[in-house]
Length: 174
Image (tube, rainbow, N blue to C red):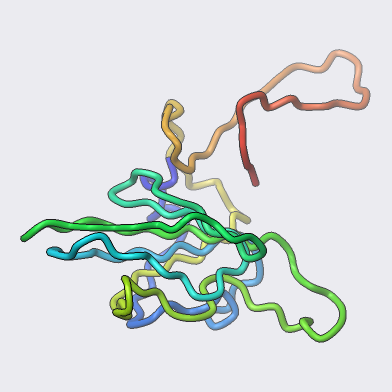
């Protein structure tokens, strides 16, 4: 599971507001924004200004919604009771860069602010997940929930030839 391997992948960077990949010296991969929310608040829209490119949103490790740069999505509403706290994680994937025209400078991550309703949220822990060195991962059994995780496997090839891997049931991968 990604959550069990964060310290093996990247150190936490503390920031008042979200920073883009470029502001943190990252070119590719994922960026994870994490914070603790404190109640009480009634159902409020989670607003992510300018997601570049695809964001998975988790509350206490449970998937609660998806945001994509180029598609309108359903609202993500969050609420917490009195004295309740919850961890909010937003995992943003860089899905490639514009390499021509007026949008050539294509920043990645959360480009604007993150709000609950009309209130800006401050106090973020950010991790740059470049995925270029997975040697320090702590491999475990797969988690059978909708959580990001690393999977590995091996197979034997007697006669090398073109190969196609069918990942039935998978929805997105890197």
